[in-house]
Length: 133
Image (cartoon, rainbow, N blue to C red; front, side, top):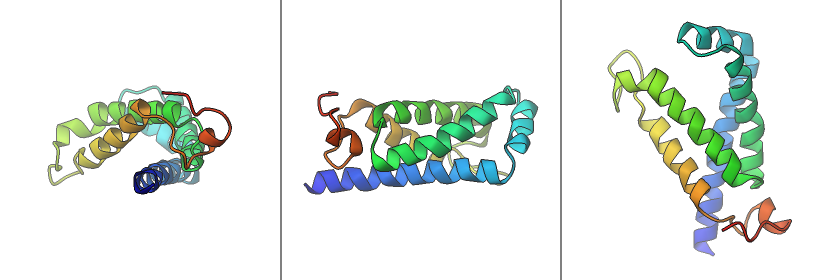
């Protein structure tokens, strides 16, 4: 049961972190994020998708519904963010911007949830997805 509680805490934290990032994008104006995406060579419309996935996906991860799929989407977001934005700053940063160490930590958490079965402390375990192994 201690393992289940630890996994619950990890899942809720990861969901909360992504929810907050999505919320910040909407509060700051997703159009601003879209313009920034355009400036770094990503399609601006992707900002709306990323913001929605972070916001809604974060909530879904918190309650433990669609954990494997949401975590896979989070992993992809983190992979693109690392390769497109953070990699050139290095692992710890370069004095002008943060590095990719936190993104990598979140990516490792996300990939863990992609490859592991639903926790008994999740909504999906209560509504019939117990056999997703």
